[in-house]
Length: 244
Image (cartoon, rainbow, N blue to C red):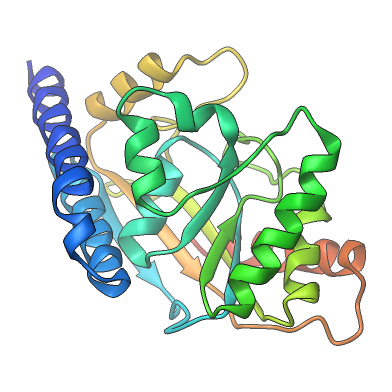
């Protein structure tokens, strides 16, 4: 009953977000929309019983590229609650009922992952967004992990920071049980996990806390995308280890 009630309240909050995007966003400027997205994300975390702890200091203004490890569908919501940014996501999300509208309203950039040439287009679009002073976010692992380790970082999207002459802020995300201060698998979404099953597991979890640990801004300093991606992964691993 407890989880079902949280689910119903969450669905209502999703509907409110959908209505806000359609009817209120056209009347708001970009800063007002970003503030609405951040508050909405914080409220949904509260509704679903997910505590949030932020360590370090998120970048105050763009341009900047946020680079984070990837654990769950919940990651985007958690990061939006800490600092509004534009995510890069698979194009299929755009067509999902309701969620596609919410993602697009939040400023998501879409990439056709099945088309290799589209990665070049995305890097160009990201570089232009960074030149325009925006804050973007990517998950360089390319897929979700188990929350224990971190998969190798793909370097393609890191090229956007080089082309856009923008700094990168590494950050790490971890879900823990706040009572025992141990790793929580409640929000995990990998392999054969279904989205509905992961959502239900999250809603049934007690004492679930998301910890987001921001590192220092860094620039390429002559590194190519592969070397920089490798170095960024090492930093994210260190930040993640400090979450527990």
